[in-house]
Image (cartoon, rainbow, N blue to C red):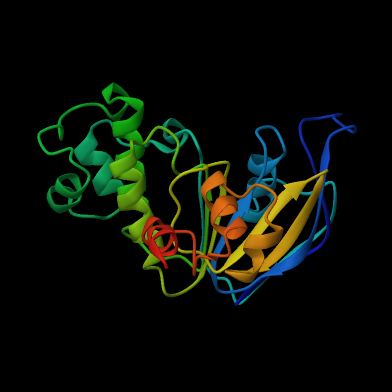
Length: 234
């Protein structure tokens, strides 16, 4: 199962010829982290990889990929149910168990759009992560979540054992365990490599990761547990 990018050029907006991202590379099975500054083109590239947008040039090939899901940064875009219960049912999941896990029990009759942004994000991710996809693309999945919810979502992502998961984010604190690191720099999608070898060349690495590397304590991965283990290493 592979997602293959060949000379893909993604432009932002009609006529925005002065803004583009050039992407070449292969996303294999596993969890991929794509970092980049705000406005660097992460969202646009995510939509191109999902097939929602057509690239200005180049090609995206999906080898062995039969199911694709793109999760937008703003969950309002993907709401279809009139109530929280109906929203769960639209995903084909049991609302009781899911709402309990998302700490939303008792809000079944509310409109999803009456929830706070953080609550709606929790609902959306809980519904989405209850399913498996060959290709799962997450655009800023940690936005609007508090630290405990970020950790819970990261734990779920760390446990994904099949398919291709691509996380586009500028998060700097809490991450899942990942297999590969990419970043958008200077209008290019750059592959930094497999973790942990990729950490030394990761330009958007969090300060804690940089500090650990500077002291010779390379973490095995970038999850909170991995960073704590490296920091406590003697």
